[in-house]
Length: 104
Image (tube, rainbow, N blue to C red):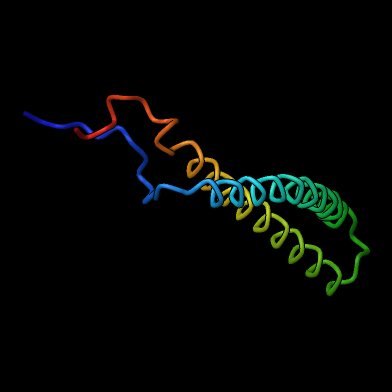
């Protein structure tokens, strides 16, 4: 007979109540930080659009704008990855897993 595993592909460990509270606090902080990161990305996207459409911007400023836009994209992407991992970590705890996932 074949067993089908329907759990997470991440190596999720079972958390204690204290660890869950810490993870929830970290997720809460990350949510507010992602708002800040997205605002910063929106600003640098605006500046990048201006740099692409305006011809009289000095080269060093033009390069700086593209650098900071790339950095802002990277920060948002890394924050989204961490947020997804933390959410999976909380959701894959035993009380959230369907009964057929348990190996008896």
